[in-house]
Amino acid sequence: MEKEMQRSNLTANLTQLVDRISMDNYDEIINLCHNADRQIEKLENAGLQHATTQYTNTCAELIKEVIMYITERKERVIPYLKELSHKAETNHDCSTCSGGCKVNHDLHLIELRASHSAMRSILNRLQVVALPLYSDTAFPDAYRVLRNQMVLIENGLTELFFLEENYLLPKVVDAQKRINVSRK
Image 1: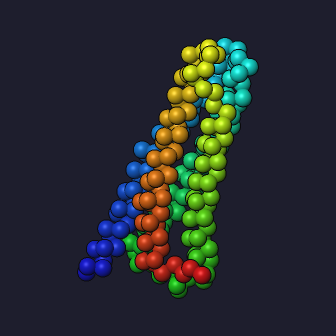
Image 2: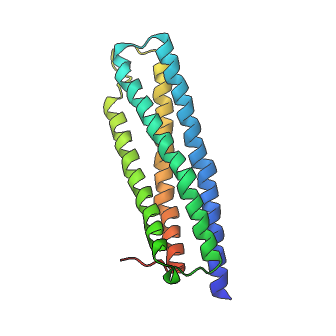
Image 3: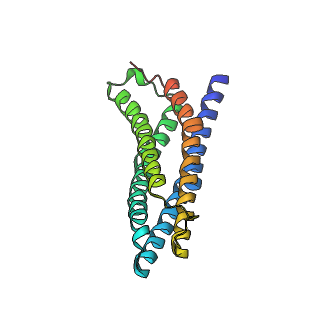
C-alpha cells in the first residue's frame, strides 16, 4: 500500500511539475521571444544604426533557436514525460520490454541536456555582441527595450534550466528507476 502511494505521489508530482513548467516557463519564454521579435521588426522599420545591427541579428537568431528548442520540448519531451508518468502509475516494467524502451528513455534525457548546452551557448554569444548601454553612443529607445526583453528571455531560460536540472530531471530519473529502465 505504501509503495503504491509513493508511486501515485511520484506520478502526480511529475505530471503537475510538467504542466507547471509548460505553462509558467515554456509558454512564457515563447511569449517573450515573440515580443522581442516584434521589437526587432520595429528597429528594422525605423532604420537600424550600424552599431545595433549585429546585436539585433544575433537576437533574431537566438529567438528562432530558443523557440525551436521550446517547441521541441512541448512536442516531444512533454508527451514523453506524461507517458513516463502513466507507465509509473500503471506499474509498467521496462525490464520485460523488447529493448526499444530503454533507448527511448535515455534518448529523451540526452536531448534535453543537449538542448541546455545549446541554449547556454546561444546566451553566451548574445552577451558577447551586446553593446554597453553606458557608452557615449546614443541608442534608440527601441534598442533599449530590446535589450530589456532579451534579459527577460535570459532570466526565463536560467529559471527553466534550474527547474529542469534540479527538479524535473531527478523526478524523471526516479520514475525511470521505478519502472526498471536499465542503464548500461
